[in-house]
Image (tube, rainbow, N blue to C red; front, side, top):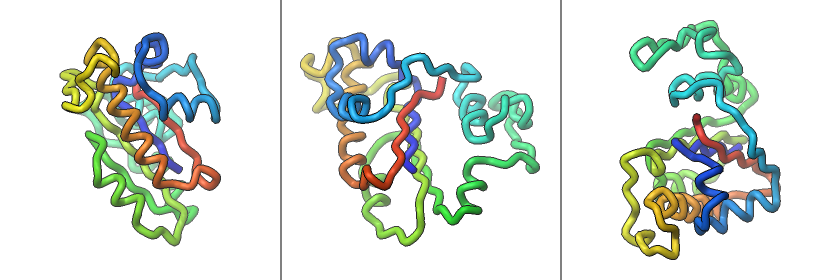
Length: 171
């Protein structure tokens, strides 16, 4: 299972513009795309808590960035997968070679990889090779093209016939 949760990912900004995102377009055209998905919270910590527990944040002990101790009795997505024999991995805040290295390692067990890049979060820093207007007009569009490029590199490392791939935003 590969879950890429792009911080500040907004489908209206990406799909309504002329953003160059061929890798994401390929996944959309060959998979399932939800354009009306809604987050349960307006902050990363709260929305990811809901995603990984299936509960509203106030039911988990998570209230804010300063009151963020998860109730020990709460079952998480990670603990369920671990019980089923999955190896869990996570990377944040940027996309890069470490992720590709992890994917190249031989895995004897099923795996879950959570990637939470902050490449679209303010302040947006556009990599040099994506600063050309062919990648979009705004920094958001250009950074989206960069994220798309990394998604392509990551997808090329996995077997899509054996891997569930989910790409979403956090809020």
